[in-house]
Image 1 (cartoon, rainbow, N blue to C red):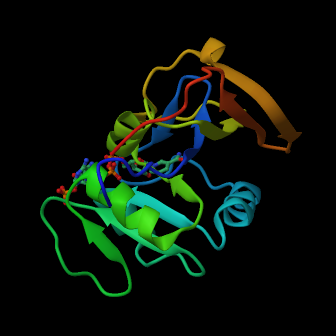
Image 2 (cartoon, rainbow, N blue to C red; image 1 turned 45 degrees about the vertical axis):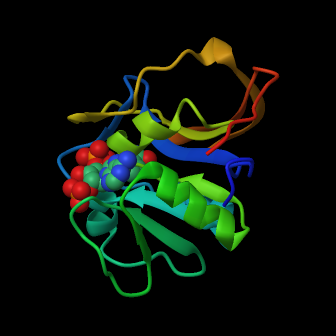
Length: 169
Ligand SMILES: NC(=O)c1ccc[n+]([C@@H]2O[C@H](COP(=O)([O-])OP(=O)(O)OC[C@H]3O[C@@H](n4cnc5c(N)ncnc54)[C@H](OP(=O)(O)O)[C@@H]3O)[C@@H](O)[C@H]2O)c1
């Protein structure tokens, strides 16, 4: 990719409680089958980028998607693309030429949030004990463009309000 090439549009997908809890240890704090179904609908056919801990927690490549795993410690993993930096992950994703979704966890969300132009958030209704948090962000920077209520969570799609979404690798 040349210096002038545009990075792919980055969308973040996350389920979080109102206090921004997203995880407990290396696991999700909840079991929400409807959210997993929605997650699959959103990401199927796309490229997904996730941190090594999230990948190990899932335990396998997500089928029907190009899986990019970020790790500074691992290299070869079967059936996935491993990249050692966020920029390298975006470069690999742009070569696949598909929509790009950042799947977490917290470390990756922190890196991706300043670049993201789309958020898909499942706001979990109940409170859960957790120790991993989505980074702080200002909802005023985001315009709600879609929503759907479910029994245990409320899904909202947001677009970044800023007019200049361009960024370079
Ligand atoms: N609620 C949700 O929607 C959701 C979604 C995903 C995950 N989670 C939760 O989030 C938690 C995991 O989050 P986490 O922050 O601990 O871990 P993580 O982001 O999944 O993985 C962190 C690891 O990814 C690699 N990594 C991250 N950024 C990198 C970069 N810029 N360049 C190269 N490698 C990079 C490093 O791997 P190495 O150590 O191998 O170098 C790092 O240790 C779990 O509780 C999980 O269940 C929740």
